[in-house]
Image: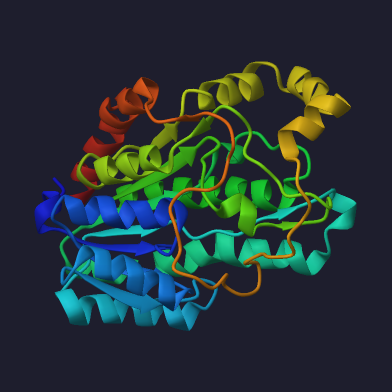
Length: 325
């Protein structure tokens, strides 16, 4: 069984803003010692100042494999071990497939997918040294169903689900006491959309209904003590799962309606020319974005998905215990 949060050492990659930032704060509020990592050193320092001496900032570019391995060493040197690793870092590019340069597709995959690969490969030996632990990756419901003008981001999230599915089974086969959870948020009100690069001439916006980033953080914190295979965040994720499973062609047709597609992928307001694709956006960082509509702060669906184990999860855990023996 995972340690209580008050006894855990947690690494959060992407802790400078949005989901990663509020996740680091939530872990700290539960008594965990937290290693905060991201590219933006100023924002990391602000998070650590808010938490206190139970946190440390380690500026890290997750796309740099050497830097990620150095992050693992820094965490072990400071706190002695790693119990839970959370990868929340991510970037986005919005535009038609034919308009997005191949180099930008490449960069999104290097951060959103290969960054997770670097993290997994670096932290597994550390988790084994600690006697087990948890790996929690922030994917997206767009890893189930893509939407127009989001191909680079959605492709990276599809790849993440494949990565964590393979890793989960491999660790069960080897009997390692390391749990793998994939978090699947719906649209979340974070600065991610303002920091995305756009080829539409307008800033992207989250697809309503929009949920508070605290809901994702709570799902992550719960998974550190009660691991689950996948945790969808937000009731609207059910529509994505069902639509893609039962009516994929019908979903294509709906998203092909020009007015609906434009509403899904844009918001009024010109591109501000600021993005974090190649370099960080300087500043102290913040948790929430600037979505002008209603932001939902509760999701009973997410609470149930976080708490109730599926029969297959229990069976996989039993197989892993047999393999361990």
